[in-house]
Image 1 (cartoon, rainbow, N blue to C red):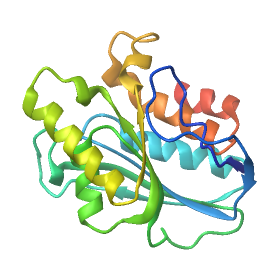
Image 2: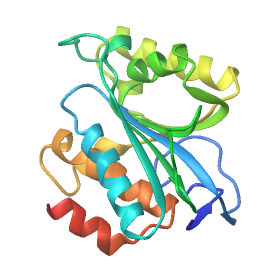
Image 3: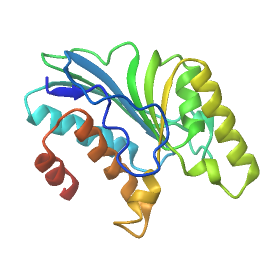
Image 4: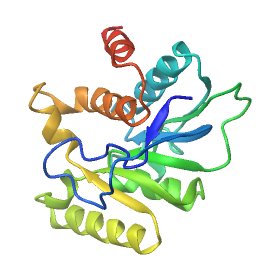
Length: 203
């Protein structure tokens, strides 16, 4: 498998908040990744694209769709997680793995659903969209802050990423581009071919 940066390259933009470490590349045998969002935000496509890129590079891949527990869940709901689990490996992969090593979450509520379902490895790395911290609705900002603090206290490595803000530097509608921003971030973390990523985005 390609090398992974143990610092995770997870501060792709100014303003990212969370623990930082010296960058050290470490070769890993396998890793389980999740990308989760509200339905319609493109997390499933991001996960599928990540798997396709890794497979084209010769890695073993297993993907499983994460389906919302409700037919049409409201935005930012615990039962509304939509996305993909991707297991990447240096050899043939035959299942989706037991627990997730790294999660990209577009909001804290869908993340909570995965935490409560026991899907995340203890101490796993969480890359969390941070725009909710400063939301104009005090209920949303309070929910975000409380959830963030609870996860940190529980031992998760939470890195806040300004995904939407960075997307707006490139596209007008960040909701339509955030999933591909997440794809690029994951390709950087797992040392995947950026040219293949560009080809995948163009599909």
